[in-house]
Length: 208
Image (tube, rainbow, N blue to C red; front, side):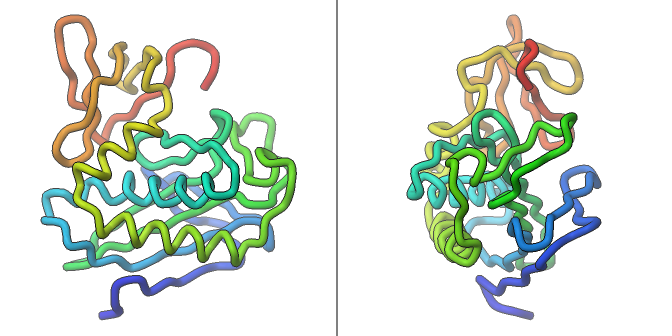
């Protein structure tokens, strides 16, 4: 029953839920973990763009601060090819809850975790409240745009757009665009695959 733009944040998370049930952990006082209720004016069959649209909003907020983020389809934000943020969307009736986790001032990550933070990428720390306000402003603004415009914004920031990628099902190819609801189109041989959130992609080669 709450309105569009209602936000709930956590100072830290020990068992935050990400895509496919993966865990997102937040260091107290270092990152941002919050959820925002949205009621976008898009038709329901276009709500597959919500996570990607939120990624555009996060990227725009970071670009305003001199960073160069990329969107890893379908729901991550990268800095220097390492994960700086994740987005999870769940539909609840006529609304959706957009959960966002963003590494802000963390300085260390496990060696086996390809992650980074805004502070590590920029060489300086950021005020978390400032980042939160900027991200919320940009994310909510993106949801006022038409989905074709959102698609163009995602494409301009898409990670691995010019590289060979591999789907989690094992097919290799190159990204050629998006479907109507945000699914990824990957050309492999003489086929054009439609990759959904149930699958996923990664770059071929050693850099992940």
